[in-house]
Length: 407
Ligand SMILES: Nc1ncnc2c1ncn2[C@@H]1O[C@H](COP(=O)(O)OP(=O)(O)OP(=O)(O)O)[C@@H](O)[C@H]1O
Ligand SMILES: [Mg+2]
Image 1 (cartoon, rainbow, N blue to C red):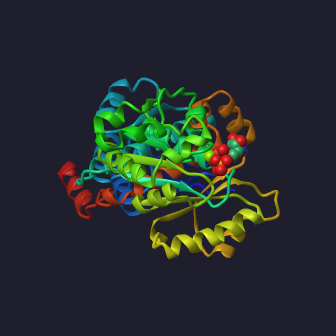
Image 2 (cartoon, helix red, strand yellow):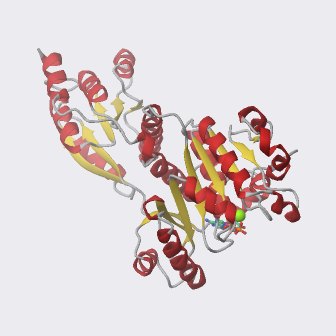
């Protein structure tokens, strides 16, 4: 099953019993890990700098340095560390100050395990989105990232992943996204998004010689999430109208206009999918847990390697389950790759969403499969080559801030 990243929590409270109680409340939440405790604001800043927690649960009234000053020091100086204030009733003015100092949320003591855990997840998700967005904003080269969703086997979830990834990058992370359906005979991206395209990629063939940004835009259908779609031909026989040259031109134009161009492909190498692979900065190779798929994709991987695409490949295991006799470790062993992400098998959510014409990241945002998809979206945004200048941590900053606050 998908091993999601743990959410690392630092508890800051001067009363040891309170820390112990909070530990108990978090004890049964497998994704949350308490990595340390601090008894005052100063210790909180030092520990936050050393341990780099995702979340700090911060009391307000503490000796030496109070929770508000510590919140300010941590939120100004440690990227990716979000603070939840724990207060008692009647501390409204302190709460206001804490929020101004950079706290993300507050919870009022005494709180239940559910209240605490949902607050941690909410704040963590928000912070992850902020970090990804920040990375995107650091891009200094024009031109978007092309991502091809590929497999040498049909029916493994390529279109499902392409669509949900596009929506996730657009809606949750705020990127501009275009999806191109290069499954030219039986593409179903438009159907999965419940869109009715007036024109498709095969209609563009006639416009080949004067194709430009404005004209191409008029062929895209807009989904409510903000994603634009260039749909596959309306009939299989129109597929042959779409030349590799046209596909190349389309990708080049879209790459200039969108942060991400996601390309869905059929389960085989075609002229157009070869062009897409050439233009891609990242290739998602989708696998499922059955021997024919694994055998085919082993050959597929070899072919991709020989085409010099090795460094772009991210392997994603879809419909991961423990019930089939083959596990993720077997996949990694037999293909000699490590998996970037795993999406659990969840027919109720995935097929239910398809039948409603709604991507599951929108219809079931709390489901495990949606959570895994968001993880994949984050991994993709993180390894966006143009955003590789991620926020640098500055070692002496906290010391400096703390000094300034305590002097
Ligand atoms: N994680 C999942 N859990 C349950 N069902 C899934 C999951 N992912 C995909 N499916 C279902 O598997 C079927 C195939 O998915 P999809 O159409 O996305 O695959 P594909 O690789 O694009 O197929 P094709 O090669 O035919 O285009 C669909 O019915 C889809 O709803
Ligand atoms: Mg498909």
